[in-house]
Length: 195
Image 1 (tube, rainbow, N blue to C red):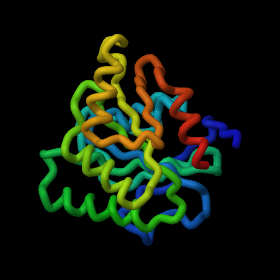
Image 2 (tube, rainbow, N blue to C red):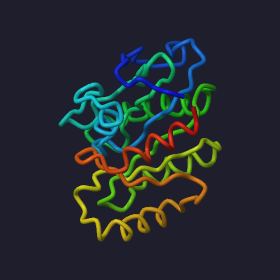
Image 3 (spheres, rainbow, N blue to C red):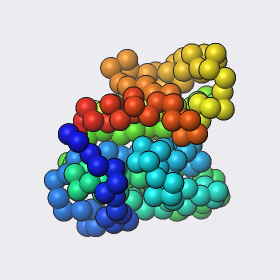
């Protein structure tokens, strides 16, 4: 599959099933804590500066954003989890919306689950990984912000993350940096396997 990343648009920001696009394109969802670098990851993969809106304010993405890539694939940006400044009720609403999408959407091929390489995975990160494994949804685990950690320490951080989530060695694990494009090729290779 050849994808022209210059042909991009936002199809829809959906709040529920009724609004999901009605086509049979494969979908790759992107999940992670607020501020983990999800928008930067999307922008880096698509060679764009501001396609997915990066925001200094975590908790900005409140809907499922379906990004149309070359009329062939949707990247689905799901709301960041674990952000405390959003009311509990609001978080529960997002939780239901994300769960409904992940468990019922037939177009979904895999989830890119993003964690910050600098920190041990949070309870939410671990829960997300366990949730995806429970529902047999393929996972690509991406450790972002690799430029913030010296290369010599990557292995140590990688093993801390893998141990915390009880990493399944059949999944892909990618060390990534949107600042210097570390992991760019690997991320695309992992995604394309599922398209």
